[in-house]
Amino acid sequence: MQTLIIVSHPTLADSNTQRFLWESLPAEGVTWHHLESVYPDGQIDREAEQQQLLQYDRIIFQFPFYWYSSPALLKQWQDVVLTEGFAYGSEGSRLAGKEFGLVLALGVNEREYQAGGREGFTISELTRPFQAMASKCSMVYLPTLVVSKFDYLSDSKKKELLISYQQYLSKENDASLTASENWFKLQLQSLGKAGLSEADQQLVEHLLAVLEDNREHLDDLAWTLAQMEGNQLG
Amino acid sequence: MQTLIIVSHPTLADSNTQRFLWESLPAEGVTWHHLESVYPDGQIDREAEQQQLLQYDRIIFQFPFYWYSSPALLKQWQDVVLTEGFAYGSEGSRLAGKEFGLVLALGVNEREYQAGGREGFTISELTRPFQAMASKCSMVYLPTLVVSKFDYLSDSKKKELLISYQQYLSKENDASLTASENWFKLQLQSLGKAGLSEADQQLVEHLLAVLEDNREHLDDLAWTLAQMEGNQLG
Image (cartoon, rainbow over all chains, first blue to last red; front, side):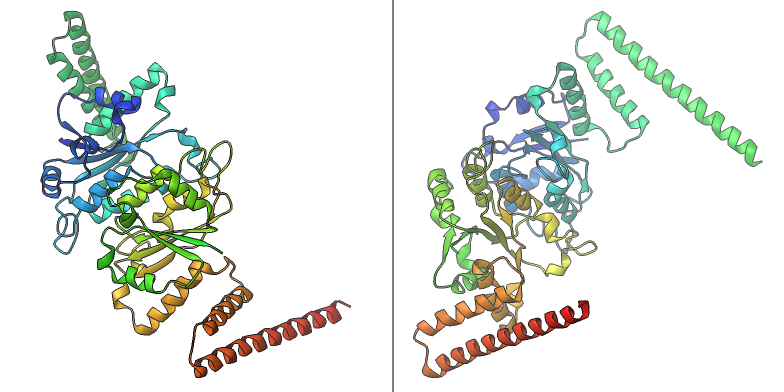
């Protein structure tokens, strides 16, 4: 899977959240495309952007949630790049079937985003314009990945975020256990290649063996259950 | 009532809708503030904008609905002008109690904006970010005025739009018949001042008399009903 991360942040260098996400990127399969760096004068190259989009399977908008939406340059990008005839229209969408998701950085706790909370509306409600955009472009809308109050996260929560973010960028959009296992196996296998110590390599091989054993055990159980059901029905 | 219309449209001169709205402005009590004309380089003057906002009772965002939101410069305006300490925060909002509304120009029929319609979501759902902004700034959120497919409107529909727009800019936010009557009376009285022909002046005076008669008749009916209820209760 090839993933394009379209980042919009007017002061990227000052953002601990964005630096952490940048440092968490998987080694391959993803492209980080920071609009304010590429277009400091705000003049977006429609043709280049459209051609780039076509190369990817999954497209992510990643930004701080300013006034319940994106920074202005990402809005400009939408208005310039997603033209009729390319992104929608009587001839269909060139983006049809691609996956689309949001990575939102919030300055307040996510639980304030609900009826009765300080922000009053849910993230799903406030991001309807992006959902409607994905729908208009015949893209598959992914659940949003929310990063809230990053600077207050504990180290263990940051490690969880790293895994969640990497999965968000590259894991199949499939809630099954098998999809999660496969994703972890791929990560572990690619780890093995990257000059680990012998002890770490053994650990990785052990983990892969455990995953494999678990899978076989689950397959056995599934087979046994199917037999029992067959007997009852017979 | 003093109303500020913050217009955002990258190609205003090409828009028949915006030209019609501009030509429909009431003679007094409203200020038309087109962001792309005032800030062609995109550098918004925070201090000037904040001082301007404080002068008005009602603030309108008026724009074509691009990708289910505003053009980029209006988003930039929000991010630059509506700062913590001015628009929200522990010391309250300097905008508290002001009214806030949207005038949206749609390229497709409004009825496409519903579940099952081509746009899939309602205007109320898609404008949640603006509603949440008004709420955060302690402003009173007005029902949105939608102008859809302006170029296809009949002349009589355009006249209706003119009245709706003028009311949206200057009528009290009150659905009562009395509020509507008062608004029409004010309009008719101000018309009288503006050098009409004698025939038109007579028409205006006649309309005012009819409105007054209707009001008295309604008051009589209300009094009679109240008496009848009193008798029944007695």
